[in-house]
Length: 337
Image 1 (spheres, rainbow, N blue to C red):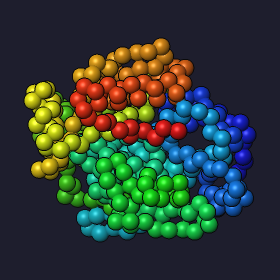
Image 2: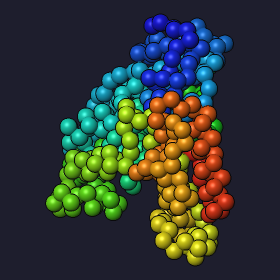
Image 3: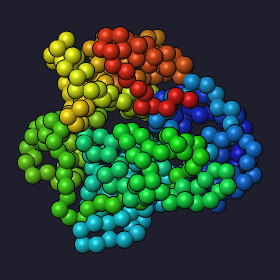
Image 4: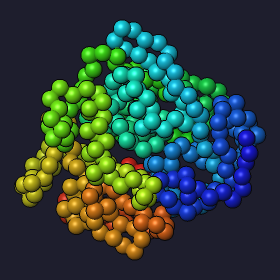
């Protein structure tokens, strides 16, 4: 365990922003994590996972703890289900692939989501009708100020749409070290209601899909729309899909009859943020070395040497324009640092 001063974070954030950390430490065991916290109890800390859900707009004047805890194990199983423990530093997509190899179902719709296991509960990651909370059992976390260990149940986490207690009341207080999820071993409950998934399956002549088929479809869809961070710096979907009232939707539909929507309840309608951004004219727009991706308006990109500040200013311009045109507020899904 070594603490490095003035460390570059360019390789540790998927936007590829050339920010630096005052100091940096790779954490590969819970013992190392406890030791670092005890020895640096007065030092400002910054917890880093997969670096996929943040935009660095400045250097980090803190000790960056890169949570790199590894391991996957089956805790218990029945004839039809299994509970799996995955350590926080495991890559999320690699974990999905591991589950598919063992024919464990429930997270195939979450294939190719960037990031690590430890940050998945914070964001309550989700895609194509499935969220982490649907399979979440509990997570173990270390309290930063006294190194005590706490188990958080699903109800403890207060999950919402891309929300959890770790982004709200307990923000900055705990470091998630592992996550337990429950998956199916048989009679998998497939979620193929989204039109794009149905279209992809149909295009491949698949009428009775397996969990692997669904995962392959999701991967194909995401790869067709989302740039690979190894090729173009990005953090996936930059904005949350806004939820508006039924009354507001009637007014919106009157002015924009082609608006797509997803009914959440009788009083709440979800609008695709990507449609709003594209309609506002930003899709494919480039500003110097940054811009909006040409295939998916939800994705802001760094073409090479953009600063986080430039990308954030573009995000603010998009928010203001969408508000002016549609009277809808879109919130960032990415954490602005």
